Image (tube, one colour):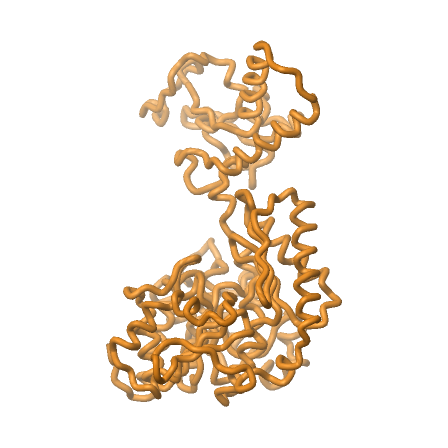
Length: 516
């Protein structure tokens, strides 16, 4: 049995790969691969560079046949790894060094060269032949995916762990029982002991019914070997929450980016959510968009983000009592806007009309202190992580960092959580969150904003529902769990689906005809 070495793990060349022949296909089993899975010969490492380097790549059907294949006929497709690129760079540098060049400081030029090399790796994705999995450090587009960092929730993880010893229906039956008990004794329930971070359930949940509804279309119970994943548990919880909230719903709030529309986009005239929002308002449900975007004194900038929606309000000549059911909460909790009865455009609601006494008592010097310390932490941490900074954006009640080079989601996550953990002496509540392409710190949070809005509209937590996409540790939607029920979505398409289901339930509970 021949022993070769895995250049994908050049840091530990002493670990061999075991060569295995199966059905005429030469394969390797790497000690680094998860579950010691076999890798096809077309994915061999750089040791095969010694064979016929001037030969072209052969991808004929003979590779898949059962007939023996001669070694000299097997020209593997070599994946371009970091070590390969490094070797090519060294060869290129060696060729360049043979030419007469001006003398420069050795270490300084080397540092600059290394820095430029890694920046090129991050900014130049590999060809499409790599598919949708990160194969090297240069696959920045894939590495920027949010991945499992968008799937953090202790209760859902507990549900998934239960599937090691229970069927899905058994899990939901137990959770139904434990949630009922938790609603009666939230501090001493069995669920609280098993999941200490679990919060409040403002409405009862029928998870067994929701599971059966989901299972009818996706046959989850028929899978024998593959348990449910995080997203499937999230869908079941969302379905149960929609059915539970519909009958008594008075206020529904939406995050903006990633929930109502794609990140960085706006609500255009052709958005499906426009008809949903208007139908909710016609169903006597107040609708509010709660966003981190803050434009003090500039109502027109808020309107630009929802231009398609407000234009439709005017086009349909909606009565004022219908438009009074729409609000925008900006800067997490710092600005509230409504539709003006005269101009039919957005206008600010005076602070004294809606802000809680606690929020009105915030001192300007405390606000400046929080933003100054947050900015310092962002800059210090970005320096430690060697992340170039393009801009520091300073607003009236927020500060944000814009990276100056492509980076991965984990780096932004580290920045946000560092501020959360180290700004412990802040005199005011704040929210530090990973926006996916930036990191912002706002004075206040969405929980304070929702509490103030519900107090302003005279609703209680069981009558509210917040829809968002960032309920993880560094997400700015997570604080809303403390003041109302939630729907956790991953994109605007999921929002569209769940709101359609919600409207159907509202019509059924109130016997109200649907108006398109």
